[in-house]
Image (cartoon, rainbow over all chains, first blue to last red; front, side, top):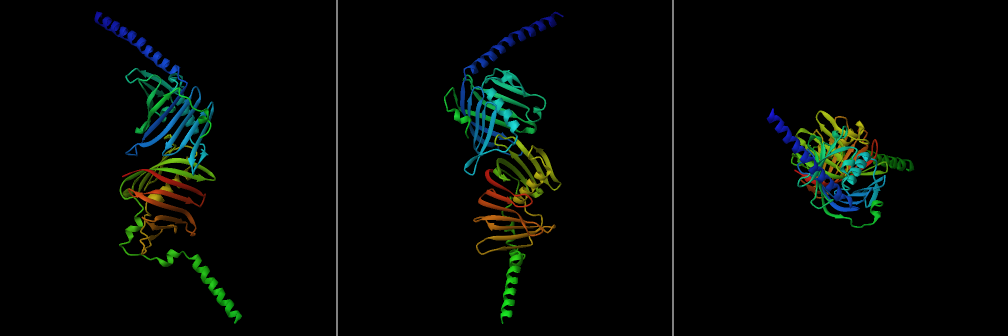
Length: 203
Length: 217
């Protein structure tokens, strides 16, 4: 009985000591994103599909103005851009030498992805309506986003790997059912650099 | 005399019209040399293969850019095709095999059975040779191949071209109307054309421009 009581005390003490430490890391993490006003970055996306032996590679650029302006642009192999300014989302494809507005394809899914990306770069992982978050202090620190009912048919989980540099995301891993996954690596990340707001309006 | 001249003109006109109506290939081609026959299959990949294409689709004045992922197992006449948005969302996923078409995923506006059938027909026309032997073929002196297939339903497929000059696939319905025209241009990478343009005329016209971005054996 004494042994069980001793073990219980140990476990309780362990839990008590772990919780504040985790909270402190979480608070620091949130703090590191607090002063971010803009993000500019390049990215390399690797799409792993079960039917392909090699991943499908895409390259692009990201521009973000806090709180709700985002440009997510692919340069290769398809030139395409998603523009978000407030609640307005526009999608364009570069075809036959000109930018053409996109037909409505998976627009809701794309809108949701843009909203999620925008939140991640602001450190607002806990504000997602579609995902619950789990924080692991690392290193490297990472936030795992677990989807709710419905979305879990398409996405099993999203892992956001954070850089040692405050407020910077190194990599996002999206895991799907049946073995497909997507990895997005961010490079040349510039925090709070200035750029024209036109990047969110025109392709 | 005038009457006879008139008759001759009528005869000439009739002959010209008759020649114009007859498909040239049927009148000039016969089963050719067995040595030339493999040339009719030059544009079709042989072993298991996979590809990624950048696709620009134009339909009713609207255009759309997508990524197309296709894998093939020619010995089993099996093809799997995926359409993806630039972000990698799978909009359409279907497999064609001897058993028919199995659609795994289809998101609007790609979720109709007619779309699945049409797309897999196009992919099949591009990457699988007709199941029957050509009815006629010839190799011209410059190396250009001309091959004709007649299907059981009296529809017709004609493939002409060469690896240097590019290829053309014409698909005609049983009334002899061209329903699809495909131009394939090199360089050919692992048996796959670098640039493809497909024009469908019937029942609904559309155009696909495909650029090979990632071939793999």
